[in-house]
Length: 267
Image (cartoon, rainbow, N blue to C red; front, side, top):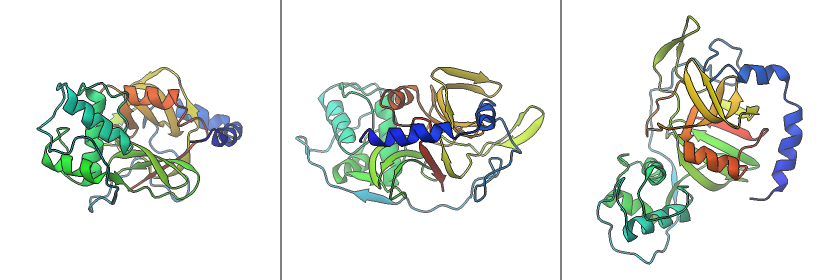
């Protein structure tokens, strides 16, 4: 990714109103009833109940290991895990530096490819996950121009896309669809749908009545992409876009979502 896009993003940041920044301080999903931009689903609306098979692209990859992997899962160590990590990275599933240890970041990447492949999401590598790796299965982004962070709510995946080219994919946990109460008001845990921009960010911990957000990047009202110690492979948040703490640290380090970055959330 080139550095040229960041100049335009910084310029856009200056055009963001103070009111939007104050709204972001409300916290993850903590502002039900706010006006919603035209063409955007209300943050408190229920998610659609219909489903369809995920759309993916397959790009065969090569590897020095061609035999079927034994069942691998969190806690395992050794050359098979290292090969797994290198395969995942080669097709854009971020997990940090390959080290031969099947830790949380590796499990998050396995969740992501299982979602993209439309197979059971259990975080373990068996024959079906192995087949997806061999086929180089990746999700298909929707944007075709510009730099966009896409959040596919049906698949619960975050994608970093540059001019239609998928660069990285992360597992995420978005709005869980349950009802909760905040400031005396009932709200539904749903992630807003639409085209937004990162409007404010906090390089540290933001805590409120709904929980803790690590290094959040707010893209609408109190909704943010943020780090969390619990990122299951299913929707569980109040409406924010959770990624692992390690993943958000990487996003900050690589400057992948500075203020002004386009964020597109969709079903």
